Length: 262
Length: 219
Image (cartoon, rainbow over all chains, first blue to last red; front, side, top):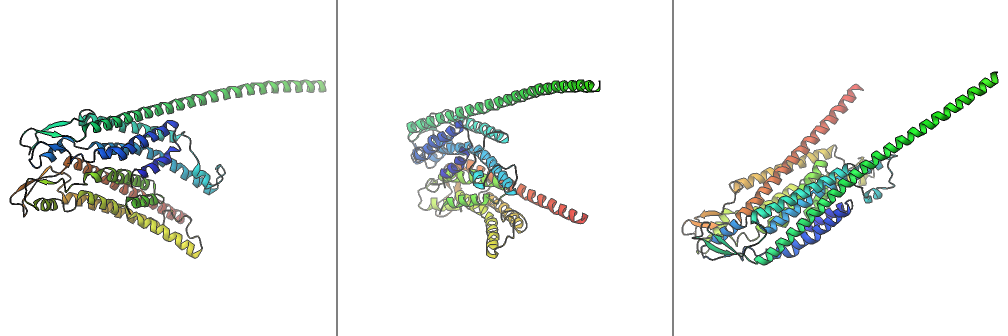
């Protein structure tokens, strides 16, 4: 049980996403989850063992470590990835619900159902319109919020994105202000900046996807409004033509009748 | 044999759940199981090695650690996850029993063996009650064992062979506390979901029963 299970779930959502959504998912899995599991976890693996303070006072190292790292970078990233992936579940649930409804229609033998068998319903790809549009857009919005919140939390907790080499600590039971040295600070800074950069790229992708969906929505609405206007104009023209023809016919009929009678 | 088994179990349960049940499965999977495996397990990995006492007396650290952590938080968390997911097996077994019965007698007893009605409804309600019960029991256990959900930086210990009252320092107390609060929050969310599902099912089927009786009376 690991991130692979998340990959299976989100992979299902991939089918119903836009192209930008698919790119976002790829970036998430390759540049964030894979980097986290394969590289970052090793870098932070020995963080407390190799956090060394210039004192023999027992407990001082523990307390100083806890003071400077209330929550480790690696755990914060794991939480960020979980929270950012969760809104996609909303889309997966909505799609599953739609599929369930279509299967129910099919089983009832509804004439309106245009599928030949259940397999076709299972394989079908739903377009992002109607209520699914709202769910999808909502999920992108929540993703953006979570990304922003975690990036801010990171910045706030660690006073920026740099990992210092040396920290001065005077929390009890340290006898005085003690020098504490962080293990692998440069490597940690590099990975931190990398993860922040990829996070920013994901935010940009989400914003682009949101703009794309909104543009598509407004274009579709204006097209529909234009179509219905054209249709009503077309109908009016047809009606007036028919009215004229009816008048002509009735006139000619009257003339013939008058002709006959006279 | 690992957490993959629980993951498969949860996906199997999904098929026979109501809408709220599916949300419960998603919460358990994403916010509890995944957080446990991906983040929490590593925090408590070396808790004993990193537990340090201000004394050189051999055995003092061991004894003090054992006194303050009879069962580690992370083990209680794992037990809670397992116990809370298990009642849903009752539903799966009941559906399997129904399908078996149909196969055995070569007859269609149920329109849809997975539909929540009749005996399966009772089994489902019992599983919901058990799930909620286990959640509450584990939350109370956490609270009682550790005097609340706080993890102190320093604990004072004077058990033999420690020669006097000794200061012992717990590793990563803040991080452990954050994840403990996260566990409590998701547990409470799951309790709320279970209670809503219970109320929804009871309400739905009482209305159905009442309407059926009303129609019968009219007839």
